[in-house]
Amino acid sequence: MTADEFDALFDRFAVSVFRLETFQQYRVGEDDEIAAWLQGEPKPERSVRTSPWLARIARTTIVDGKEWSRIHLVEEPLTDYLRYEFSAYVESQAAGEQIRIADRTSANLDFNEDFWLFDESRDDAYAIAMRYAEDGSMHGFELVTDPPTLARYTAMKGAAWGASVPLNDYLVRTAVTTGRA
Image (cartoon, rainbow, N blue to C red; front, side, top):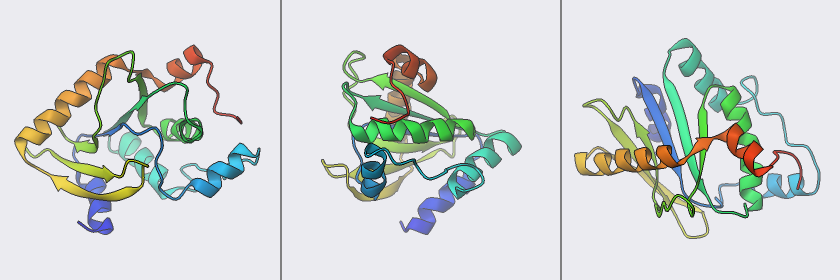
């Protein structure tokens, strides 16, 4: 699957898209931005005006009535990457994405697969299995349509959802801020 084919899947779904994230750090080209943020520099503006990704979320949730959601399984103390990522989550949430956080240790969630799950309640459901190395660097992704894997992903989503809380609740409860380190 090419990057363009991957991207096109986000225009194809009918009802819902869900993302499960299990890594505590991803190496996806943000190292310089995170280092600058840790040094006290402001993050570049990221909004529906400046980010095509956020504009897509806003358009599909507000105009088309589709649902975007994600859960990140975290371990405390949070990594610098996650603290930085939470500020991006606030921006995604403002665009219409439901963001939830689950403490993988207290919830006993030993998942180590990352995926996007599209239209899980429909007969034409599909997913994208995300492949990462142990250090969080991207190895690739693949389209998944086989019913057993889709059922496993749906079950993982259900377990994670039941153990998670909305992003804002997590931030308040743990006194984590989206500001500087």
